Amino acid sequence: MTIARESTVSVAPNPLRWRALSVLALMQFVIVIDNTIVNVALPSIQQHLHFSVGGLAWVVDGYMLAAGGLLLLGGRIGDMVGHRRLFLAGTFVFGLASIASGVSVDAAMLVISRFAQGIGEAMAAPAALALIAGLFTGKERAKALGIWGGLGGLGATVGVLLSGILVQWADWRWIFLINIPFALTALVMVPRFLPDERPERRRERPDVAGAVLVTAGLTLVVDALLHAANHGWGGAGTVVPFVVGIGCLIGFGVVETRAASPLAPPSFFTDRSRVAANGASALMAGAMAGMFLLLTLYQQQVLHYSAIRTGIAYLPFCLAFVPGFGISAAVMSRAGTKAAMVLAFGTCTVGMVLMARISVGGDYVGELLPAMLVLAIGLGMAFPAAQNAALAGTTDETTGLAAGVQTAVQALGAALGVAALVTIAAHGRSTFHGAFAAAIVHGDRLAFWVGAIAYLAAGLIALAFVGRLRHPTV
Image 1 (cartoon, rainbow, N blue to C red):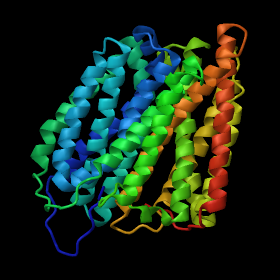
Image 2 (image 1 turned 180 degrees about the vertical axis):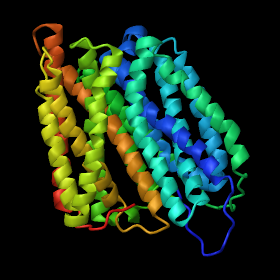
Image 3 (image 1 turned 45 degrees about the vertical axis):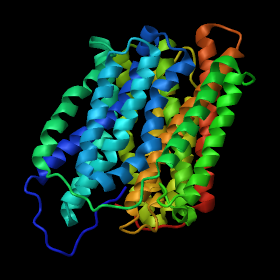
């Protein structure tokens, strides 16, 4: 993925650039919503389409695996065929997959549709960001990217609330069908605001084999983990996909070292801070995504919260990100990125330990709320600090690549985290001899303790390998 460089040649800006931004940012807003809106609806989806707990995780993981595994490939293809064309194609795929998700008649149809939605995001999201970077320069670019990021952050909050409202007062299918008018608006308006591009013809071919191998490898590993959640670790259904998946990932490494145009050049990963930041980001995203899924099921299956009450219960969590952002910026400017990351992941560890106190009785104010607030502040500190470390030492030519790598790593880490924590929770439930609600709580506590260990490991990685970067990256 390439972010356009500012040119010294004076070129008249597109007079419709702000209108184009409004449509591109609105579509990004919808895509971010789609990452979070599904969580509150999961119990209703499970009931109507008869998912197992392990199978239900595919509703989340199918989307994230496709989006994360193909993101860098999408950016490269956009450089070759034109970002406007790829954005329109990705939006069309995303919209069509949203219809298929909304009308799904069984679990398999929904999971396949979610993979297709992720493919649409992998095409549309990097293309939209590249279009915005090319439309604006100087202070206007900073403002445009701020609007883009702000709407993305707002989408995460709106997603959990909107999901509760739609599930409670309409039907879970509307969490997907609501995407359709936004996709149609983008398909109609973007061609009016942006001229078609004629990118220079490039000889190198995108690394399709690498993208397929990493996506297939991680999908098979996730399949093995989720199969183990229901059937244990000894059967062929667990061992075979795990071994084949690891083989695909090894093949990905081989292909990347030999490819003429790899998804990410091996030299890109020689920076120790950058590699550590991406590793910590993967652990962070995995623990967070797994916690969201299990906590949502806990609230509705154990505490018997309605969908809208579940959405409202998450609101303090979403709002508590804001002070975390401010704390992170202050710590980075005074003590450096390493200090901000260590403090952030330490706070996340405390928050997850507090989350592991959940009980069958479920006191929201005494148990859930303190854990949510501490964890959200920690995550609000961690995201910008990890981004700053991941973009350390980049140039105009590599900033887009660095941002794309971190986004892909977070998505793939989230998918693996969901599979791992769901498997751990399922194992804890199966070994607990007691009532249904008590078994759920026992399994979730065990998973949350593992999540706390993941955050602690992320902090130790930052402490050991991230340099003392002083200036926050915009």
